[in-house]
Image 1 (cartoon, rainbow, N blue to C red):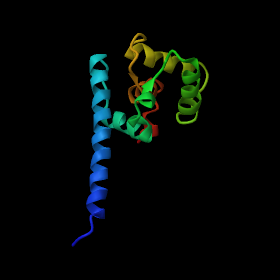
Image 2: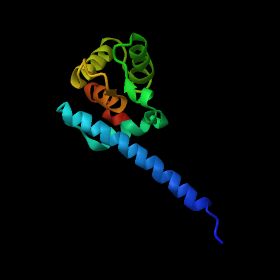
Image 3: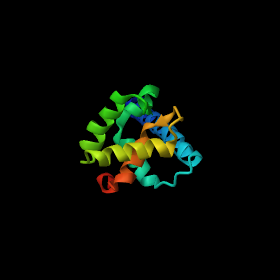
Length: 127
């Protein structure tokens, strides 16, 4: 009888891809509802770069009203990943909030980060 290790690995990969595709579909839905045109390859790359955190509901959402979270995004994503600081970083974050809607409490992190990347013209980081 053949070992099930291979089929277990495939099943795990299928579940991960299924979960990823669910998150990606939520992102596309949010962008469409907000009237945001997007590049699907870039959106996919940004979402993948966030790793497994996007599978946890709390980590999937951005609390843009929480100054601590905004500072963390500015420091760890905008400055470290994209290499942008100062007023340009603030402007990009404000742009993301505005595009998704300041009253929208369900700001999906991949969408939020995608908009920052787009505003700063940093798409090459994800090539």
